[in-house]
Amino acid sequence: MSQIYDRVALIGLGLIASSMFWAIKRAGLAGEVTGYARSEATRDTARRIGLCDRVCDTAQEAVEGADLVVLCVPVGAMGAVAEEIAPVLKSGATVSDVGSVKRNVIDAVQPHIPETVHFIPAHPLAGTEHSGPESGFAELFDNRWCLLVPVENSDPEAIARLRALWEGMGSNVDEMDADHHDLVLAVTSHAPHLIAYTMVGVADDLRRVTDSEVIKYSAAGFRDFTRIAASDPTMWRDVFLSNKDATLEILGRFTEELFALQRAIRTGDGEHLFDYFTRTRAIRRGIIDAGQDTDAPDFGRGKSST
Ligand code: NAP
Picture 1: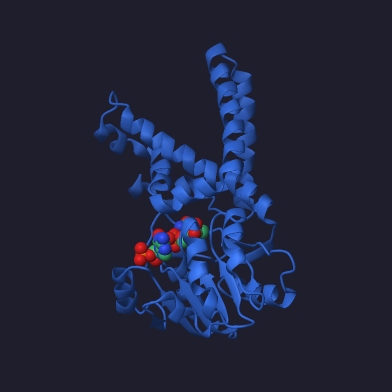
Picture 2: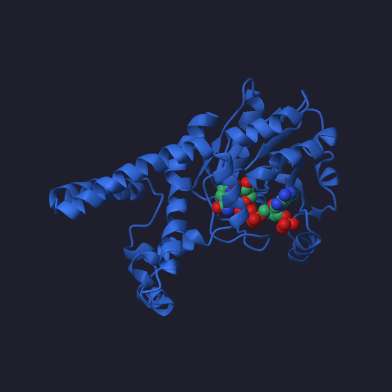
């Protein structure tokens, strides 16, 4: 793979930015990668582990001269960061982001982007429940989708270049408009996270089941909720506050379906339950056939971990 940008600046040095750095290095996609994080502790860690070719003490310093700037901070912080770096952005550069919500980020960032700079929002559909500069790894984006969400009049050449970067980092790339993105992600990611948070909260509240039982027998399904519910609280607070409409729409539908299932259980309507579970099983098969998860029992964890 050949070099796509001379200089890339990563603003925010958590899971996504650190994974981007290692993936960029793996394929030699940039001449130099600069980085900035708001806390000194994160900048120190980055320097210690060799995360970024150059770690800067200010966002402006990191951005100066960069051909691509990627905002890798929580969704609620994107607007303020864009405002801070706007005066030093190089003419002809591209600003992108990795935020999990797109409409809200576009509304917060776009007003600060100078006319001579391209703005191409993006969202890699890849992550783990870990966060921080030491949580990243080069393979995170391999065979995962990255959605580009170009704004009106985005330059096709700048889009093609950003697409090449994500493909070079191992992703499959699609384009989508912002509102559709937010609805799709409400279904596939945001609502499931809220449900996981709720289920773990319920188990915590239910004192009839002791803590040790919850932990001991968690392989029966609860464990997968706990993994999701361990995700970063700041990131997820921001996701729900900024994808309010789509998430509430999906949760409304979820509640209706839950009531229907609740009724089927109460009235002994086994046919309803069986048909419902047959339909949902086919969705799991579709995900495996699309190469987005393993077919191995229990996600390939093996006997020792259950
Ligand atoms: P992370 O590991 O928690 O890292 C966040 C980074 O942003 C840290 O360097 C943090 O700096 C910095 N930061 C936090 N609040 C800030 C503020 N108010 N102003 C300036 N910088 C701030 O987060 P992440 O998982 O990489 O997520 C980053 C972005 O990627 C988010 O927008 C998220 O929606 C998106 N995303 C996440 C995932 C996922 O699964 N994690 C997947 C796809 C997209 P300090 O360390 O100095 O506090």
